[in-house]
Amino acid sequence: MAERIDVTAPGGTYPILIERGLLPDMGTRAGAFGLDRRVAVITNETLAPLYGEALCDALPDAHLIVMPDGEQYKNLNTVANLYQELVRARLDRKSAVVALGGGVVGDTAGFAAATYMRGVRLVQIPTSLLAMVDSSVGGKVGVDLPEGKNLVGAFKQPELVLIDPNVLYTLPPREWRCGLGEVIKHGLLADAHLLEMISPSQSTTPDTGQLVRRAVQVKVDLVQQDPYEDNVRAYLNLGHTFAHAIEQVTHYQRPHGEAVATGLVAAAWLSARLGLCDTDLIGLVEAKVASVGLPIRLNGLKPEQLWAAMATDKKWQAGNARFVLLKDVGQPTIIEAVEKDDVIAILEGIQ
Image 1 (spheres, rainbow, N blue to C red):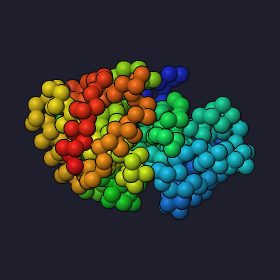
Image 2 (spheres, helix red, strand yellow):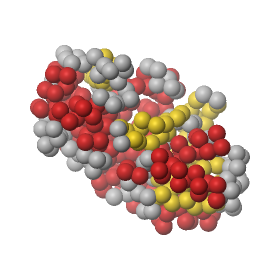
Image 3 (cartoon, rainbow, N blue to C red):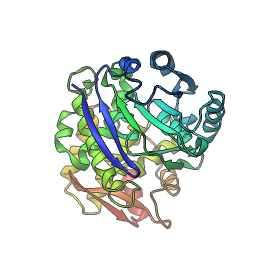
Image 4 (spheres, rainbow, N blue to C red):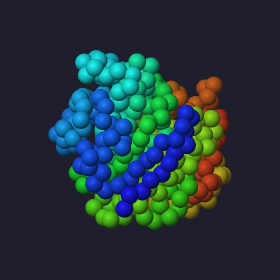
């Protein structure tokens, strides 16, 4: 059964459609989706033979652009190459970019769409659980610098988000688990029932669509209140100050979802250390993260290196450490100027 969530954003409203079998049906619905004009489908080397080539064949006027696969390619060099490919594809200001892939493709292609010819239409077709529930929604696009993650970016609202849960059947188990890291985050922020729905093998069950819908709804509710992250949208960064540091220190060898999972554990410990929550919350977070096979420990990463990496986090303000923490499930809060000693103590404690 198809699900539709309408998102009110600056400049208008766009729909998120969640429907099994949507991707193979794109040819017959191209006109309804505004894809019957010239489009560039940007995907990666892994997804091009799985879905990209078929999608381009189905659309009436589509050009396939393939970028390398991996977080290490989410950078300005890749964006420059995409610009050249968009020119070769003869995209004009009425054309559209279709971002077909996970978070790296969505963020990178989205940034290219936001800046090519001062902006062309963007359609997000996320193919990973993580991208479905998080990065494809809300209009934040961007790339990494050597100094830190997502330091170059823009707000670019998509014209449309198309989610076909059937593509999750081809998702590697590790990528499924990584997506669950963000789903757990959404449950901790605003939906305790979502935590109960999570299963390590849910990509093959009929309930996947409902899991995606509930997780997406959490993000939609926050971004509608605060589209430019001036206040409550920042709650979506729960665990991410730790996570981005973990990614940077490991040179992105630890994937985003795994880093987020460990970051959620660290945030729970820090919340308890600062007297914001009961220690029972730590047990709940650790148990849920571990139950789906995600890491709850840093496994030897050096606390001082992680702290240094946090210093370039774009969520910090005026040089002050800024963390999203929890008073309880459904009760996030932002804490400013957290002391280094408290953070280091947590990082040492979850080795």
